Length: 130
Ligand code: 9YT
Image (tube, rainbow, N blue to C red; front, side, top):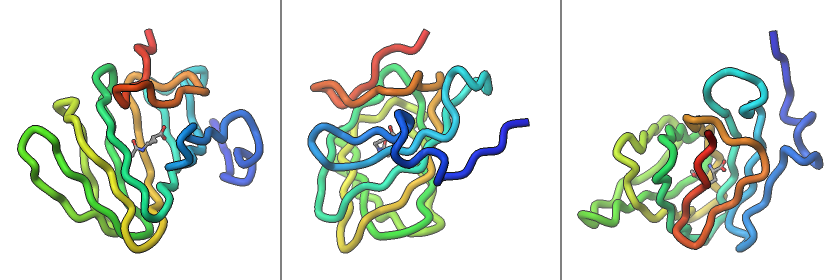
């Protein structure tokens, strides 16, 4: 069994900051944990907008704190994100993620799992894992 605490991740190589300063991702489970997915606590910083397109992954996101929104680029639909809201990018949807009045704390699952140090490329994607 794996038991890990968020305090074990902070200030280690499993804590990854976006180069543009929009978010920090604390990667509690990664590919080498052999679960078939990775599991992260992500904080999206207040007032930021991030364009994302996970063309190589599916991601599910569950909000536990804060206030934000997701806009799907294909159709311009805007979805408010609040504690208790989940969204699943089952169609690799291109989207904007915005943190509005406060930081947004999200729990995120990626399949296939991230390796560890990935940050978004110019398209907002992570590279293929396998
Ligand atoms: C919700 C989202 O995709 N935010 C960007 C960071 C990502 N969750 C990660 O790498 O943990």
